Amino acid sequence: NAGVTQTPKFQVLKTGQSMTLQCAQDMNHEYMSWYRQDPGMGLRLIHYSVGAGITDQGEVPNGYNVSRSTTEDFPLRLLSAAPSQTSVYFCASSQMGGYPEAFFGQGTRLTVV
Amino acid sequence: LAKTTQPISMDSYEGQEVNITCSHNNIATNDYITWYQQFPSQGPRFIIQGYKTKVTNEVASLFIPADRKSSTLSLPRVSLSDTAVYYCLVAFNAGNNRKLIWGLGTSLAVNP
Image 1: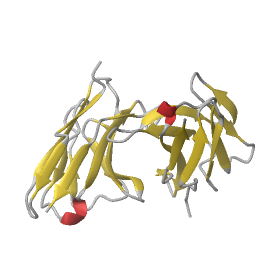
Image 2: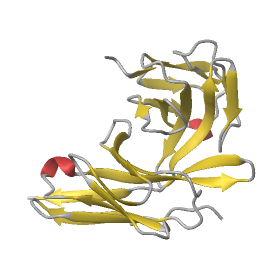
Image 3: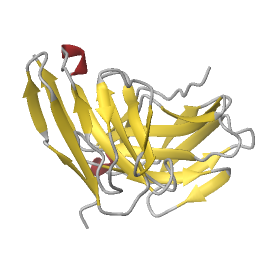
Image 4: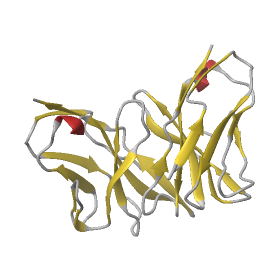
């Protein structure tokens, strides 16, 4: 049982480059979300989705796009990377919005230089 | 203002009971309080979730007073492997929406 799979685990980008962080889950969860984690700031919600074809903004959505074409996949796109987007990114899924529990991926450590 | 507050760090010794409290004024009436554990270079992992009074599972207990303005995660007889960061997660009503707010985490160090 793979759970939530994120790729890549590490990435270095130059300012202005674009990339997509991949997230896939095999638990048939409707709710998926992306967080960023920065020292001293905890986990902050970027975007979330309550089902295929439905996405919404979280607390810090600027600079990021998402789409949800299937239940399993929820990619996060950085259109033009900035140093402020250097962070660790986590994807999570759950049956509902955090209930009964959310399952997290292993994270992607992104550095923008 | 929706906010959760938990201690930044705690120290303990193997075999002791550890209690971590999270304060969360004005949380959503019908929402759960959830606690997660995170090890370095890993995603958070669900520990326990509760709505009121006391919940116990195989790894922890969660105490929630009647006013639900705080919650206490209790780890019985901690071991070195319990060294991790512990987060509380609560929901707040934000207009017509529900907003999930994470605490900033409590770094627990268990010493031999």
